[in-house]
Length: 549
Image (tube, rainbow, N blue to C red; front, side, top):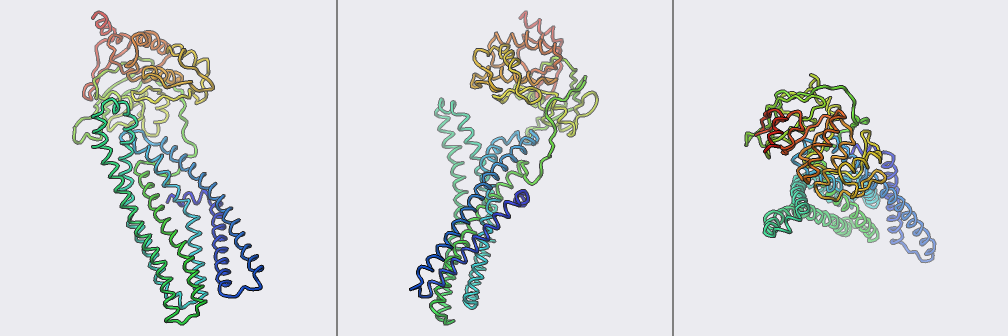
């Protein structure tokens, strides 16, 4: 279990917390016994001594609990940071294909689930303290009156049984609550990312709010309500049972067992004291169930915190080699809905020579972006092989294969930190030179490894992403419709100046484009139509035809 893993990793801290919990429980029982004994005897004439002893015990409790709070706070914050770091590293190690359809789930996992996971380990000291208090308290009750304890023992056993059954039965409730929250996260992301469109088109905003968002909020509310209600009722039962056995002790002690009023009073005080830690165990049970639900959800995403990370992950920097050709043979890819739509990419046969400029065109949904993901190894084909110089690219070779590529995808992400091919801060001279080439030197500065601004138009953001891909200095550049948002001047510069410069540096260029007037800039052109690849006629001939037209 996850909890065992982190207990092993923080064994020393947890031993210290356990010792402090045991010390806290011991001092609490000593204080309880002291108060009980002093409440049952006359203290006149010994008031100063009683006050000194009582204050000593109270001071000891304050010091121990303060020290315990400090250790718990340090441990809790460190644990939260470690959980976030572990989840982030596992997310980076995940196969991208696994998450293509569940991006919203990842945001919820990295933000919401982490807050529920930490208590799985953090509850251990509190649980230990409360269990120790309960055990020591029951021992004290036995010391006071074995007969009266025999009367209340079934009540205590009933509380434990009730807690265990509730914890087991509410697992599905917490899973439903987590599923409802995931659906809500997806809509909340849409709310943020679609703010401009929703503001502009009020009927759509109204429809989104009433038909999609409101029902999802209500579904989440209902799931939280049902789960909270179950634990709330169980807590109420636990509280009633805890006070009920105190009442049973009073009745049995006075009417049946004939115990003295002093002993009954001491037993009642101890019983009421014990109701606190017993009730706390119920409260911790709800936190534990919520945390295990989040852990199951993370496992469903592939973010398994039980599985250890490779202590020496493979390097992602470029791996120089002298590859000469890349080939796709009978490559297919089946989409998640292929069973109902019958649509798949391929089979595709394609060869790419080192240093070649390849243009790919095709209509929306023809499979261009999928082909790019297959080419660079971010997705694996359902059938067929991708090979480099005749050697198939298997899972063991993916990191090496990916290290040949840099890309500006259609749904690219722009990073403000600019790095070179070794992951270091890029040379300022190189960055300034490329800022000039992409015509953004008047708008963007580069200081201390960071671009001064990335809040630009979509076309300008694409230029910055292109800049970064060039500084990556990989063998192969994938550029997916990079000119779609560019003005005519930069578009012409891109095809007639920048691409030839990269080609002269020996780069292999794979460009998705619809700019047929520049097709003469390519060595080769292929088109995709309904998942099938077609070779276009001679690129120079097509370019000449487009220019004449």
